[in-house]
Each structure stands twice: as C-alpha cells, then as structure tokens.
Amino acid sequence: AQSVAQPEDQVNVAEGNPLTVKCTYSVSGNPYLFWYVQYPNRGLQFLLKYITGDNLVKGSYGFEAEFNKSQTSFHLKKPSALVSDSALYFCAVRDKANTGRRALTFGSGTRLQVQP
Amino acid sequence: NAGVTQTPKFQVLKTGQSMTLQCAQDMNHEYMSWYRQDPGMGLRLIHYSVGAGITDQGEVPNGYNVSRSTTEDFPLRLLSAAPSQTSVYFCASSSDSHSGNTIYFGEGSWLTVV
Image 1 (tube, rainbow over the protein chains, first blue to last red):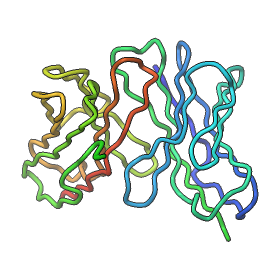
Image 2: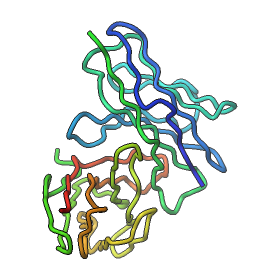
Image 3: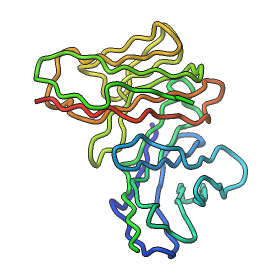
C-alpha cells in the first residue's frame, strides 16, 4: 500500500520569505513523488516530480523539492514566496512496483497563505 | 491545446437522479482516471482505465460506473445520485509508457446532490 501525509493543513508565510510545505510518504518499494498546485475553482496543475537521480528537483514557478529517502520525505520549497503562490498544494506518490493501476495516492493538501 | 476537458463544470442533481460526467483528452493517452475531491481528504480514485475497453475500480467505486469505448473518452456515470456524492470530480490522463509519467488533470466538475 502507498500513502502520503501532509502534516500541516495551512502554512502562513510573509512575502519574500522562504517557504516549506512538508510531505512524507510510505511505499513498499521505491517511490515516484509529485507535487501539484490547485488554485480556487481550478484543476490540479503539475509542479514537479521525482523519478530517479538527483535528490533536488526543480519545477515550475521557482519551486523545488528535496527527496530524502532515509526520512521518507519530499518537502516543497521556494526561496522567496509571492502572494500569487497562495493556493492549495498536494503531494502525491506512486509506488514504482505498482505498475498496474498507475494511480497516484494524494495527501490531504496544505493551504499556503502568503501575506503581503 | 485542450488537454483534458470535462463537462459540465457545475451541476445540481436531486437525490435519485442519474447523470454522466463527460471527459475527453486529445493527447492520445492510454491511462485515464476519475478522482473525487472532498475537504481534508485529498483526491480519491474512483475508477481508472489503462486502455480502450479496459476499466477497473479504484478506492471509492460504489455508486459510479465507467466505460472506455475509445481512447479519447472516459465518461463517469452516477446511477442514482446521493447527497454523499456531492463533491468535486476530476478526470485525469497520462501516457502509459512509464509509470513515472505525469498525470494531467481536467478543470473539475462541481456536483451538488440535494
């Protein structure tokens, strides 16, 4: 079974400050890890993913995430937050061994609020 | 550049009514799926398909049917709507060539059952 935990329902940060949105995962094998962002009344937009290789993954809009296998984490980061980054962020995992279903398992989401 | 298209965007149903949420993709993706999004629960998989003519159940399939007669289309049918099916529904697709492929989502369908 695969699962994802996003321990924070909401993260508040001031514009210009660094931000971190936390994600931990559980899979029986090795993971594929994804971050998606959702703006109000919109669908999910892909931000970045970890497949293999370099543990630091860079994605859209200046976001990056670091894969840490020993801590089973994949935290989303950005050096300098913008008000326009305010949205709902989802972490998702797929077990590499789970080739049949190919579905993602999502965390419950973290709302990021960036204050001007 | 349409991607994944869902219709309708908003719908109100009465308990017991049936309806179909439409989903189409123009990326020639083999894999398609339906999720529902409820507050505090992330997205949960309803049904999925790995190709035309092949469908299977996800985590929360009860009360929903799907079919996949073509690669492009993957409609979701609510047989007899219940208030518990009030939710936001997302259709998604991805290429089936590698399980690390990105899944792309439609804009969502907001369904209220009264």
